Length: 159
Image 1 (cartoon, rainbow, N blue to C red):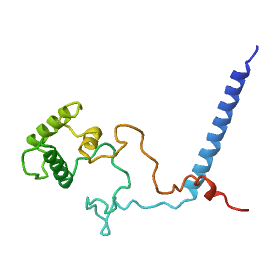
Image 2 (spheres, rainbow, N blue to C red; image 1 turned 180 degrees about the horizontal axis):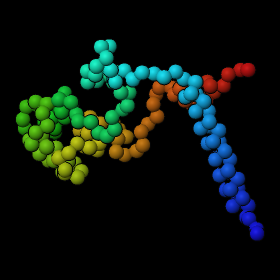
Image 3 (tube, one colour; image 1 turned 45 degrees about the vertical axis):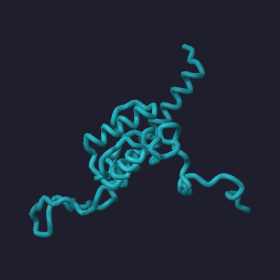
Image 4 (cartoon, rainbow, N blue to C red; image 1 turned 45 degrees about the horizontal axis):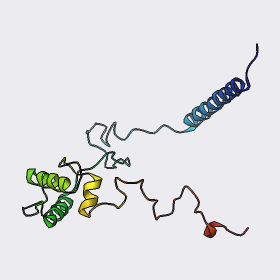
């Protein structure tokens, strides 16, 4: 029986991974056994009965997907559409049929797909979007990352 180098490497890495997972699961079990039991604050109140109240602490999870624009942002979009001549009404901060129709007219006049729905390219044409939105990947943040060290000559520290 002959095993190729590739198959042997694959087998060895699989065995190492399995062994590592076994060690990891043992350490997790040891930690959970050593940790004291924590009473679930939602299961009962101070009086011993369930009140059904939600925790005051909000989830730190970020909502995924596109959020609806605020009334202020809608009014800003309506003003930009009015400035272009596509929107005839007074900006009211409500995304109504006349606003959708105005956006559709604006999109058609500027060579965009006339859907009447907000998108990055439409906001960019209105002068309200990011210069890279819908065109390129996001620009790196100006804030320093805590995960990676800064690059360049400033990051070289003398020993």
